[in-house]
Length: 388
Image (cartoon, rainbow, N blue to C red; front, side, top):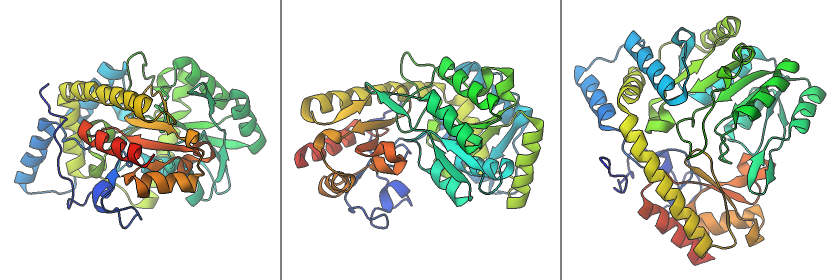
């Protein structure tokens, strides 16, 4: 491969949340960090070069994306997701969670009910609660190691709580599901039936494993397009999270006006120029880098699967259909969440995301990030094996 994903890059003393803030987050200083969803790989050369060239220009004034930026966006989504995105309906934001929070404020009132399916990315719950909305949860059901939506419960929760908005995660973090078109259609039809608006977080859409295809929610039906926003970003795909750039597709004109009004209330206008430059360079030049990365991640997944089966028989990997985040069932250890956290984070000194933070259904699980050199993965798993 052109890119060497086995290279171990020292990220200490680089203001890295993942590496430099263990003590502040109450973890051992020498813990191996497999928690937060950023990668330990350098982004592609073309992005680095574009940022260097912009830096050399030396002026970083207020900036807006050009036609070439939106052309790159359109080309990427057409090629990778068969989506002809109308870029005139795209609004830039500094992040997907930011956009979710802004949409919640724009389309609902305090004490309105907002629905999520847990276990799910924990900022969803935090964002709902901090904005004084009523959190409603429909638990995903684990059927023989594969999570599914309980549609009967999903609809009942909507009806019984007068839900106004649903936050969808696809591909799903942390359980790794890539929802099928039929599953998404069922969800969308229920939401349409009860006038529930959908926020579709598709930030992990570029990471699917063989046999699983990502479906952009708004492309399923014209009615869905009018009843949703789709949150996209290059940040997970190309390891650009610190540049705070995302592209939010809001096809409904009325909703887009309300969203922009919320931006005005917040005082947010132009995106940062570095994020704009990086996003365009990544979408214009990122195919080879991403293809090689996905092959490497597939190898990491196979390595973890084989390691667990051979050395950690009381743990169970939930087979992912997408993302580079693995959901691991640790209930075979017969430990409470506190004991599991102590064992993995403090005795083994492997910094993971504890499953319970993703909701009640996450109790007894851990989430690990496999977007790192395989040697680091081996060290971490060896530490877990050692304490077990």
